[in-house]
Length: 289
Image (tube, rainbow, N blue to C red; front, top):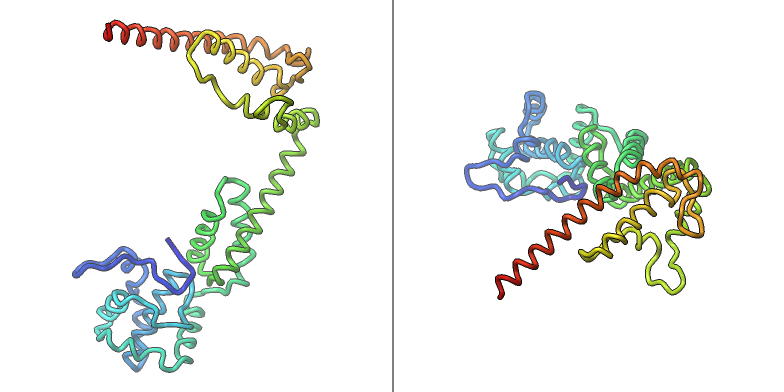
């Protein structure tokens, strides 16, 4: 997982082995080797190379605390440069050098400040909100990965979290408004009524329709069929409108034929389940006897 704080999500490195993260982000390419070898001091060479890998992995520079890097990272980079990793302790004694290296890497490799890439990030997140059911944590992670891949420097954690939360709320509001507009008024009214708890009842109509039969019996099968007819036919969800008697009006009648076959099939399956349960019970009685 990527993070935009001054910490590295690296697993411990065993002796003689390299983690996937080290190879992916801290293996110096030809261009980086040319740039780092142009530095005069060993400490600045090592520090520049570590910063190069840091921004590739975390999406930000550790300019405030350049020493907040695991020793395994420093050793891995030092081995590539033929240097002793102890030189890294000297890096950062001159704070200006750290910032100069960060600016050089940013300009050379085309990294952009968050403000320069914020519009593109917003467009990306709005599309994700509109087309997926991802929560704020998943969207935050996607935002971080998008910025790393597109070389946009990450802001603070709080700023990015607020941006993601605001865009998610705006996207959901747009989606809800769009759905609200296309749903007929009568259907909207019926859907709202499903959330109400009728007098002398313990649950709402939606909860009642949502729950299936709890027992295997003929009465339960009858109730299940009534429930299927109510949900799929007369409730208005397929063009009809529920009346006081719970039956569909004339506009819902054309869909009745579609339901009959489904009801018969459901009844047959339910009856088979009842028979199987009865057989098991009878078998248990015989075994017990």
